[in-house]
Amino acid sequence: MSKLVTEPKKAVQKNKKEKNELTQVSAIKGYCSHVLDSFKPVIKSIWLLTSNDFSKTRDMTAIVIFDDLSEIDKLTMKKLDVCAHEASIIAKKKHKVDIHTSYYNLTEYWDLIRHGSPVTFQEIRDGIPVYDPSGFFVPLKKLLRDGRIPGTKESMRSLIGKAPLRIRRIRHEFMLNVLEKIYTAVVDAGQAPLIMAGFSPPTQKMVATSLNEIFVKKKKLEPEYVRYVDEIVKTWKDYEHGKIKTISGDMLDKMLEHAGRFIRRMEDLMEEIEAEKVNNK
Image (cartoon, rainbow, N blue to C red; front, side, top):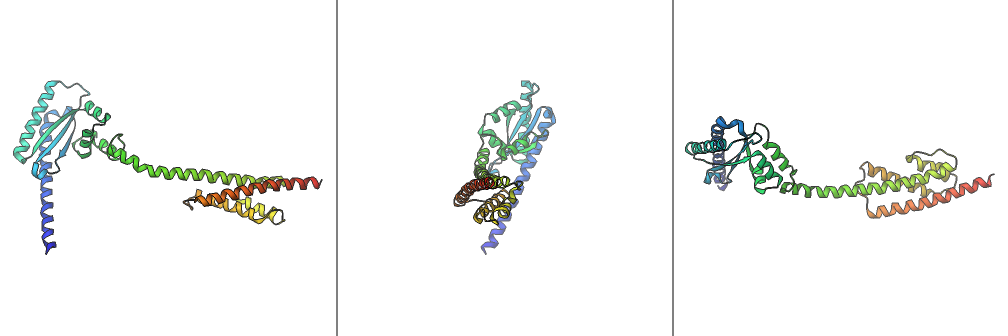
């Protein structure tokens, strides 16, 4: 039973809202038509601000930005004010809506934006463009919405929203840098004894294979060191290509330990190769 009562109530509220919106549109159209008929050349933009409780207050605010890049005399401004007042009276009689007019010149409005006027940003945030032939209003609204106007709550949200991403990026770049250095150190250390033994330096991926073929199989190097190279190269490549998303502290410590042991063993292996060459002379 309660559901049957609720649904008609929602339908009534929806119809009332649609009727109010139609009234607002009709009123502001008539207002703009009356004002623009005589003053279109000097008007840059007209925005509409409506009350959140329009059904009770029946009032709206029209923000008129006039173009002062070319000089506008006081008489013209007075005539514009009278014309806007006449348009408000017509809207009141025809639609029972009060339209209040706020005026700004273009340079004044930019100055308010530049100094971060909260009222101005609220107008941009809530305003609806009803006359904007040069596209003045819509870019401002988009910049504000995207958080690209400094000092606004949208820009603050944008900044704080980017912070976690920046932290993740810092961690990723830090880890990428550390892993690359470990990887490079191990590859260079692995290539050195191969070159000393008279072989061409293998590619990074082939260092482990070459060490195994040339030294391990001849019992000149323990297999664990080939495994160290293989694991470090694979971990670096997997992280670089996104197959591994995170590296734990323990895993990094283990890689550093293995890299250090590997490099020391390669130094010893080079001394062994050098001593072997001397003995064979």
